[in-house]
Amino acid sequence: MEPPFANDPLDRALDRELTRGERILWQGRPIPRIQWSMFGIWVFAIPWTAFALFWTAMAYAGTQSATNEEWSWLSLAFPLFGVPFIVVGLGMMAAPLYPLYAARKVIFAVTDQRLIKLTLRKSLTSITIPAERVGLITRKERSDGSGTLQIATHIGVDSDGDRTTHTFDIGEVAAVMAADDAISAMIARSKRRAATA
Image (cartoon, rainbow, N blue to C red; front, top):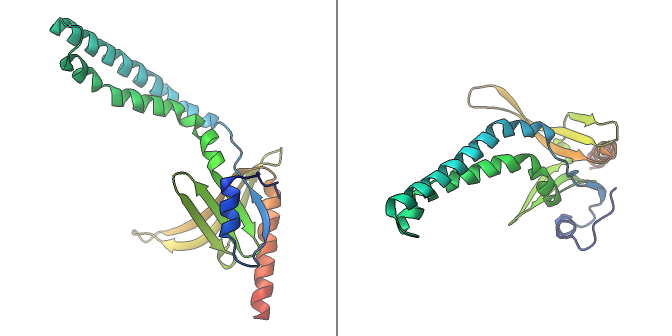
């Protein structure tokens, strides 16, 4: 189990989430890693942003020369049309760096009763899966022991009649094997409880 972060709002939210007698077997946070595969979007984002900046500058220069004034509403109105395009371009360029920010907002936990994922942004989002709904587990592990878990939780049918599998994903955490072992322990305890009930 990873050590808790002192006075951290996510840790306090996790403590509050637990029911009486519920025990945490494992908890972890996503590793803040840059998504190198997402840098491919820069092939589109850089020309987009450069053109948006160029267009906005030219629109401003054009309205300045047309009005022959230092400042006017017209000199701003037309160039401001380019600002949303600049913002979109900057957003696309920042996309590969977003996981560095998002990782600090998520905590995963495996208790003796369920899986928990808490996301704290403007509000707290809690996703829980009881032990009885845990199905096939797919683990992807790197050489350093970090990795991901994909846990099947429900098989349904979509509007086209195709089977779909709903999953609970534990993404890119350190010592992913410890999370896998904790889930196995949770399932074993759930089965023992069901057998004695």
